[in-house]
Image (cartoon, rainbow, N blue to C red; front, side, top):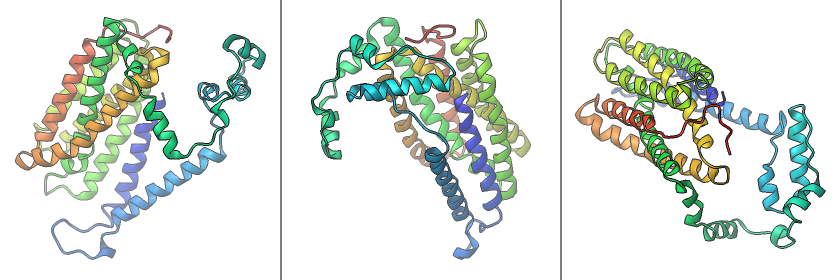
Length: 333
C-alpha cells in the first residue's frame, strides 16, 4: 500500500505541469524571452514548495521513532525499550519487554565508544573500514536463496533502466507529432498518472490470491507492461497512444508495488538491508544510464528507447518466472 504514494506524487506533478507548461512556455525553435518562458520555472518552484511543506509536516505533524536495532547498536537500551513500548501503544497493544529483561537476554550495554563524538569524516572511514564481503555472503547461503538474490538484483537493474527510458521522456513521446498541442500532451500525461494510481491498490489484493501470489502478480504485470510498450510504437494516433500509456501506467505500478514488498520479504532479516540496498543501488545506477541510451538511440530512431524499455521489462518478466521463492502466506524471518 505504501507504493500508492509514488503514482499520487506523479499525479500531483503532472497536474502542476499541465497548468504551467502549456500556458507559460514558448514554442520550440523560436526566439524567446525569459518572461515568456516561465512555465518550467513555475513548475520547479511549486514542486519545491510542496516538498518543503512535506519536510515541515515530517517534523511537526507526526513522530518518527528511531529503529530499536540502531539504538541497541549504540548501547542505548533504555531508549530502545521505550521505542518498542511506544510502537506497541500506537498499535493498541502491550509488550512484556523491559530494560531488565533485555539486559538479561542480550547482555548489558558496553561502555566504550558509545559516548564518543566522531566527526563526519571519521564516521565515513569507520563505516568503510567495517565493510566486508561477509555481509553479502549470507545472501548466497543456499542455492535457492542465491538464485533468488541474483534474479532479484537483475530485475531491479533492468527495471531501473526500463522505467526512465519510457516514463522520463513520456511528454516527448506523446508530443512527437507536430500537430499535437502542448496542452493536449500534458493533459494526456495527467490522465496517464490518474489511471496509474489504482494499480498499486489492486496489487494489495492480488498478492494474497492463491496460485498467483507475489510472483504471479509481478510476472503478469511486468509482461503486460513490456508488451504495451511495443504496442505504443505501432500507432501514431494520440488516442491510441493515450490508451497504451494509461494501461502501461496501471500495470507498471502493480509491478513496482509488489517488487518493493517482495524484495525485503525474501531476504533473511539480518541481511535484509544489505540485499535491498544493493538492489536499490543497481536500480539507480541503471537509471542514470537511461538518458544516455535515450539520447544516442533516439537520434537514429525515435522509437528505439521504447523498444529497449519494452525489451528490458520482458527480460525482467522472464527472471520473475524463475524466482524459486514465493513469500505469500509465509512469515518473514
